[in-house]
Image (cartoon, rainbow, N blue to C red; front, top):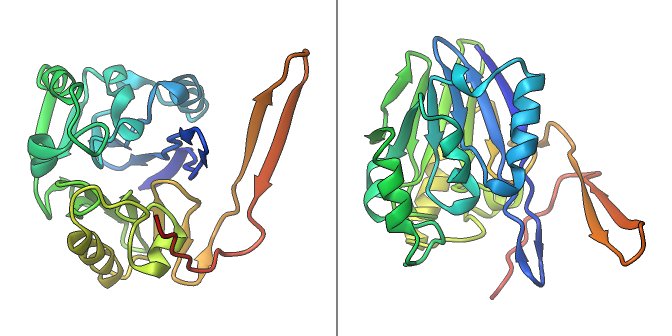
Length: 244
């Protein structure tokens, strides 16, 4: 089995709102599986990095949408031949924005034209890759568990978006149910994964980060020069809770 981050996730927010930089992960087992697909703003980087990994959209057998928030699912149209795997409650109750909106019904109508499979806890995508039902952030959020006999990796989506959320025991946002969100974090911890690849952060273990990502924030100015701020981690985050 091979697990590769195609796109790195990052928790980028500003006073204007969120940038929605969700991670995209490729699992190559008996099937080629893509966990999340991102949104239009990362469409070109997604295609570029898939090409660098030697994988084309037509090569993907299954796409797991951990949930239907816009930043994780909007590029699903790139994979019309893949099986699209979604949590059963997410297909019924999930929304693009996390709250009721007028766009979600049209998006779900489009999804219904694809090969959609709604799944519950424990569903096996391959003998080594299975679904972990992790509701709370959204109604039917799912994580993806991959075991190769040597190590256990869980792609947690936004059930655990970052290391801070893991240590806190609560994701940054719970659109659906806070109690369920906390229980989902505990559930993932109880599985004792060797590695967690979160939805919006670098991979980590119980001891801290295993990789240190950096991100460039690029701001356009009136002249032909951009202001670029580069942020990189130098140590593991301490648990922090932000109050609204």
